[in-house]
Amino acid sequence: KLVDMGKEWLCFLQDTNGLVFRALPAALGVSKEKDFDVNSLTVPRKPGEAVGGICTLSNNSKGTEITVNVEYNQLDPLLRATVSKDGDVPDSTGFSPYPGNINVLVFKLQPYLDTLTKTHGAIPEFVNPKYTDASKTTFKKPTRLECMMQDYPKLLVGSDAKVGFTQMDRFICFSAVKNNVEDAAKKQALTGFAESAASGESDMFKTNRIILSMAGCQINTNEVPHKTFAGIDTLMGAKVVLAPSFGVTLKEIKEKLPSPEKVSISDTSTLVLEGDVTINSLTLDGSLCIRASEGAKVEIKNLTVKNDAIEYVAISEDDKVDEIYTIRGYVKSGQPGRVIEATSGECLVIKE
Image (cartoon, rainbow, N blue to C red; front, side):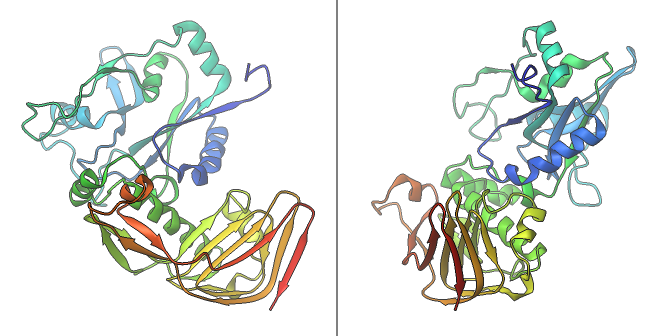
């Protein structure tokens, strides 16, 4: 159906990774420019991290090779058996030489349809057991037979299909949310990445701070404060939410900030931007939400906002709070602050 509709590309998203939508336009552009049949989005990966690695596997006897993800539980044994007895170790960059697969794939649709027609969608299966500890004698949870989208290139061996990957900095494309607070604290201690609700939210704010900084705004992206919630070290800094309706790419966001050097946001501030909002001059030390519904527009000519900041307060196991807070390890404290909202058909111009 998609091919009949004239669609050319299909993006597969896996894991609870909200950051990926900032990176998909670039990954799609690479796929088109390089004419990739399959393009995997990757990040720099630390050895031992529970993330598969993209490798080129060669079969010298058959003269074939394949670029494909190798799951993290298989990667180290494979490397020890073929490349080095040391297995998966860092190179001079401090990262593994094998890019980390984040389970985001861009497929060219027509070749994908041809392969599905030929194979009926059957992909090789494997087992990925999760153990309670390093002794590997007790399952953490029931194991199962699995097949994975990232194994799709195995169906292309012997064809002229072009399989590649696009590597981006982690801050722009990958912050999975999949661990409870106890497991997240352990994982952060081991790899530096908690992959929890707290870290996922914090990383989203961090990415948006970096984007505003890249656009030219005065906002701190380095040496921001840290707090610990449920044993998880969490970045603080300005809490910035940039809705897709405000802008997805850096180019779109720059267009909404014609004088970015006149936009200043303090470390303790909260800023939410949604819809057709243009900011010429803003000094923010507190909480501000600007929303323009579909068909509306807000233009900030000049605005200074100073009010009480929204803070995160750690909770204990005994606190009776909703699950959305227990999975983070904190609750939100403070008032919404200044809200500027334009409904459909309105055009608000703010100059204070």
